[in-house]
Length: 184
Image (cartoon, rainbow, N blue to C red; front, top):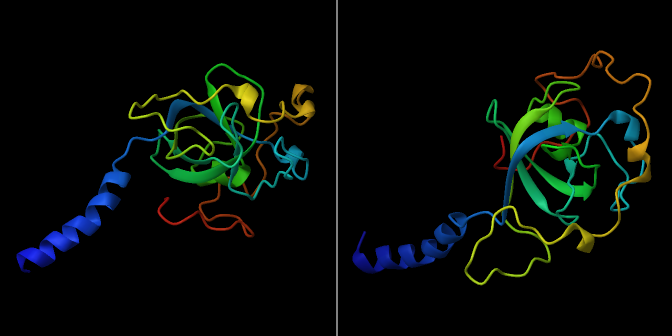
């Protein structure tokens, strides 16, 4: 390879390399759980129906439509989800995942898992002007509607029951789309 061709290739690859090395706009560690199947078909805080087979999540502060990467700290598996709901505050809990996403990163049925949640960008966020502030999204008041009214209800009678027969299978249940490319 001659020098001009090398420089041309380097100049074209440099912006992509710098973008991929940029720090995430949001990063948080804590516990994840999954949204129970009893909420299937109910409207989320964003106005979309909840589908257990979708690649979605509930987060307390991030705006709806934010794409997140959720990585299970125990086994290293990660999944890409989109925020479309809210959930009540529980100490240490950072995210509630759809059933498909929770199964994909192998969160045990009816249990919590230690996860790392990251977002490359936050929709509608103002640029920080060269400074980076982790765990500092805009205040929750600027993000739409309050949590779903049914979240304050007591748990269902079957809460804590044994898992369904198809839960935790190594192959995704039928009807669940594959995760986005680049996520294992």
